Image (cartoon, rainbow, N blue to C red; front, side):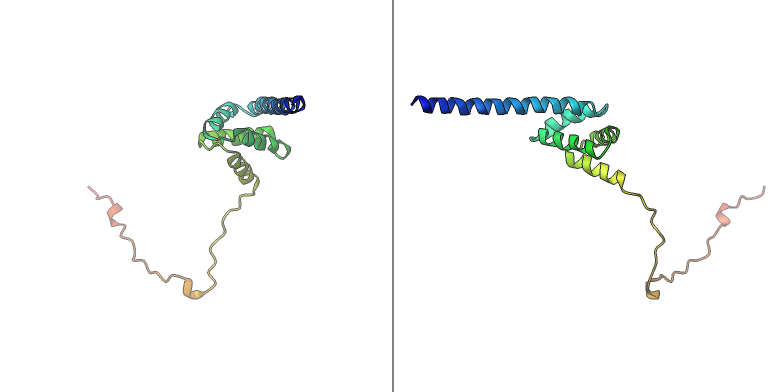
Length: 134
């Protein structure tokens, strides 16, 4: 029976250590996250209010530092906060959109002559703009 008690206490202690490790890791992640920009703290609080898995979102956002600069992530956090969109997916999408080149739309090309519109417009009556001579 002593062996069983020791095993239980060992397992309980392991669980306590794992929990404490997650708490310490979360605190380190939180401190690092709050340094991302001026709106990071507001985003952090919004994330905790609206998401059950906030630590996962924090880790995903912090992992973006390997690809984007802290300034880019901070700007995305500010924009997401203004839109009240508190998730790592939103930050990833914002950063991805900003990275893609913005092409100007080209002219519409119609391949079949039947698609063209044959519209005749009447001559505009500009007499309403003329001022009477007094």
